[in-house]
Image 1 (cartoon, rainbow over the protein chains, first blue to last red):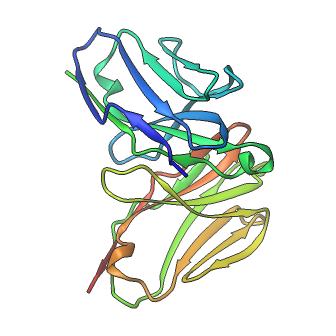
Image 2: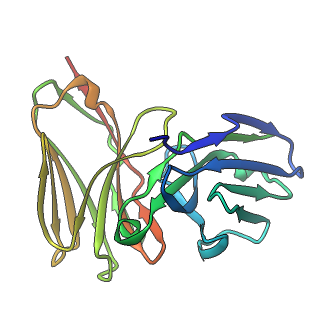
Length: 115
Length: 109
């Protein structure tokens, strides 16, 4: 069984640029969530995708957007990058059914640095 | 007041010690409570989850939830150097997990 994978591992961007981060969910999982983890903080919920539609969103501005594809993989897009966007971006997938209530399995993350 | 409060530590213990990690929360609607372990530069790894109040044991780990006090704990028995990591509590709110800041644990041999 393949776990959650994310690409790229590291990324350096300039303020004002746009970035796309990618995530492949664990086999059998149909729900993908994205989190932002700043240094020394816990992860913060950005949004969740289920059946290719946004299924909940945290307190993040519209310049954070996402997609989910028919194979359940997902993208996180961030426009007009700001210095405060520098963080570890985590993708988590959840299984179908009741497990989705408490089981979220995280990938290794993409570390984004905005200069 | 943050929804989930967790003492960031750091916490340093000798090998073999019993470790107690704790979180408090303010939202009485939380029903699912999780503990994650995160090694440096890695994603969080689900350790245990508990539904509502009570205890749950898995090997050297025991999770406790006291909903009346809005307080959850994770106990680690016979701690090992490999347990050195950041421990994050998390609670389910709708489709999101709300995390504490994490407690950094160091177990010395």
